[in-house]
Image 1 (cartoon, rainbow, N blue to C red):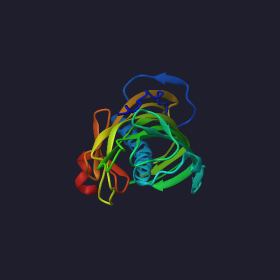
Image 2: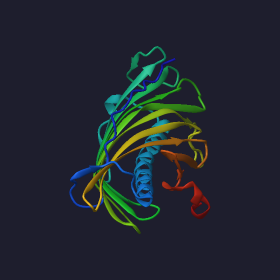
Image 3: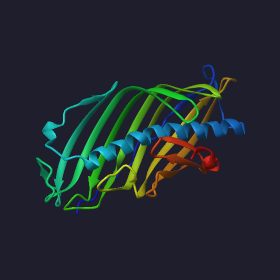
Image 4: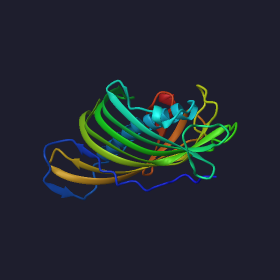
Length: 259
């Protein structure tokens, strides 16, 4: 059995801009309202990336695999995606093609760049993005009922604009992720979701306030899957709920209003 490679990603360096250019660095506590806004914006940022991750897992967990030579770059809207695929046998030997009888794991290397825009729960989000993933899909031998994803990723978003009732906020963001034993049921149906596993992101936020102070904050974001449409997402110690069907997130205390 092949052991999936789990590598530590780079530190995440998002830049969140509320005001003019920065001058001094402030370490004092933020206003509680602004602290909560940072958490909410980080949650929205991570929701957007998780949508990409799960869509990729769904697509490649269920497709009939072909030769790596038949995997050219392709585009989705104004997002351009390229991939490299390596098929591996039970002993780690490389194979030219996917085989139900002999392929144990697949190693994917993805690169995506371009721009996109979407509606969020409370407003709109548009961004220019660049993402890389190094992912392993395992547990493929025979007629299995579940497949396992592990791996790492990095992401950068520039000129991301988030508009809602609290105004406009512009971001330059970069991030890393660790995907740890995310189990996807097979066959995939419209109402099946990852049954377990986590995606973890470390977030470092640099905020420029209207008073021209630079404030730095760190956020650890963990998404835990439970087999339902609603995954749990924590931003530091604050709990959010992530709707995997609609790709929306909200504070858990507001779940009755959003479900």
